Image 1: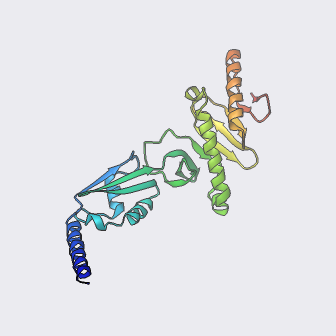
Image 2: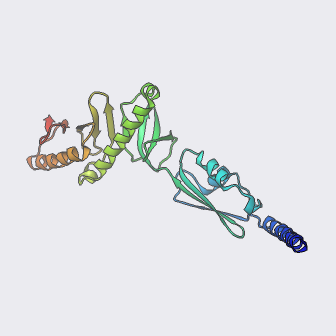
Image 3: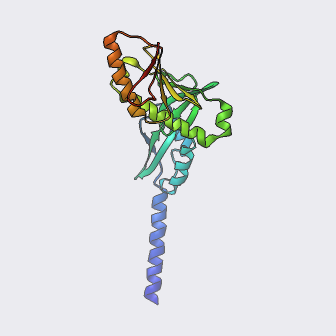
Length: 235
């Protein structure tokens, strides 16, 4: 019995010492890692709610993650303690892929999410603009709108993989409920009609047609790629 009490007393003393020691581990450096374009390190620290001098061991890491992820630009966050006095916050931002036009302009991320309105940022000025939506349509049927955004992103990615991307550029992706998607290159004045699906096949068809038309010196106003094995021109 005496041995048990002696062990318990020693354990309490040890825990007390450990507690006091851990309380002395104050935070003196907050490190922010990640490729940040729309946020900066200072904003990340402010979002975290953490302050220098906070006890390192008592920080609620899941709560810090939750607070930072409230920002619409944040895709993922990882927070780790770096003993004895540092906290590491690793942030991955959502990457804008399109600019959505619905009366105002909004960034659309690679996940098909509308991140926030465009307020004079210059970094993504060369992104194609997605048109054809109305705010009312999007509010009435959010799941369908999200699916169309994802299809538009898939189309933009397929377009960027083509050999003609550099010579044509891409100014606009236009959506119509009945006809689907059309593309408007930045550097040549024509419309390419690609519909709702099979974008890679249709864009390959566009590439072949452009090569042939180049040798013939032909210009055109629109090209419909929805017919298997051929492209229909409007002069």
